[in-house]
Length: 282
Ligand SMILES: NC(=O)c1ccc[n+]([C@@H]2O[C@H](COP(=O)([O-])OP(=O)(O)OC[C@H]3O[C@@H](n4cnc5c(N)ncnc54)[C@H](OP(=O)(O)O)[C@@H]3O)[C@@H](O)[C@H]2O)c1
Image (tube, rainbow, N blue to C red; front, side):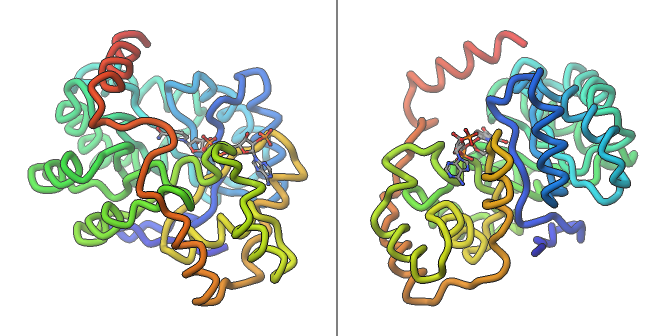
């Protein structure tokens, strides 16, 4: 495993396992499978409604808690100091753990400064080992970095070969924020797994398009958390540390960048209305 060192010195695996869209009933099995394949970093969120499944797997895995790296996220509905504080206690309870390795603000909406103060407090009292944000575009990220007492250590944003976030990455580097990808396969959109360039490069290394796409992000210094409910794919996605893409192949994949989202943009008012409406409900 390769690791990113966060600004507070904490080490975070460069590869983890994401559980978005995994039903609560399947989550325990999936996370146990992932842990048996070697994954030690697990990414969930209050909004995924499967923190308890992750907690059950943590408990049943038999892996010492300090060897795992658990991430969850505070949803918009829990924004503000008091609600965020209560939601941290609830996440700890559901995850069956005394501490969370990384807690993120899921979306930069509602009273996220209040949320951040609750997170800073929980960080100082040892309930959180690291704190960060998700979906903070450069404007919101710079604002928080400039005014928060403790700057975010991670920013998790849509990042894959078609949306490489090169500008945002440079800003994260400037502020000492580790860049984490969500949707490293763009959830299969845009013909991801059959892309000609990815498959042509993959053939050279006897790897798959998925493996090359993950390896590319890691070599760009981006932490990845691919999701799969299939164990054979979990194994495949984990098997990316025995090869290195050449500069030429990195350049070929760099050229796939469209600089555009395949999901949504916070600069689109309709998206913001949709997300903030969702955030009014738990
Ligand atoms: N912060 C946020 O707002 C945010 C948003 C989205 C996601 N996330 C996090 O990022 C994680 C990853 O993103 P994601 O789940 O949206 O999508 P993703 O990892 O880009 O793609 C997952 C899809 O790819 C398929 N897949 C996985 N490995 C494959 C392989 N080797 N070959 C072919 N198909 C493969 C999966 O199918 P099967 O499951 O059927 O194998 C699933 O349909 C999430 O689980 C979540 O933890 C965060």
